[in-house]
Image (cartoon, rainbow, N blue to C red; front, side, top):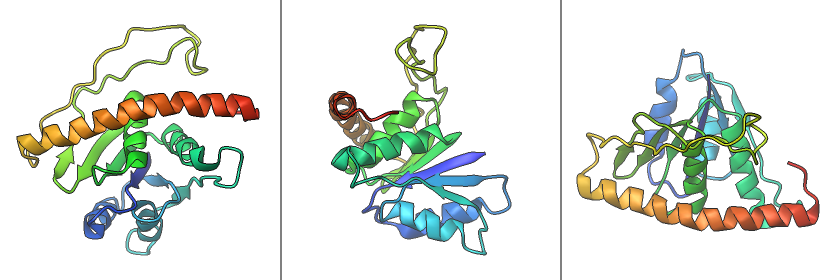
Length: 192
């Protein structure tokens, strides 16, 4: 299985990430991550250590390319595209990690989101299907079903609402930003 492990640059607990990586030792897993400092860097360094011994594929953002600041969005898309499941270590503030979570949720690939408040796990994840405008769906449009999220045992109810409200706010921001990135790609002639 190709497991994406991504997260916030300022995620406050490196030990939690390291313990998660150690839990993967001996499993049939290869890792996929980005190239940001923080969690992505910890995954690269920790996953390849002899104690864990996992292969790690890193997707880099081309900050000097035509997309400039939008390069991180493109990198997030590539990470999600090339994984089977995604685990995110989110500080509940990072818009880049929220973008990756949203993409994974929409693709039906979100395994869990680990926050400083606890862990969120999707239950019965039924993500929106690709539409006729996306190349992955030759069949045409399909029905969208809502994503059901389980109430995690280790996250207090008031924090659960805070985290998912924050993600919802980020999602609205990214929907608008996705449109702007698509227009920029089209204007610059960037091939997907």
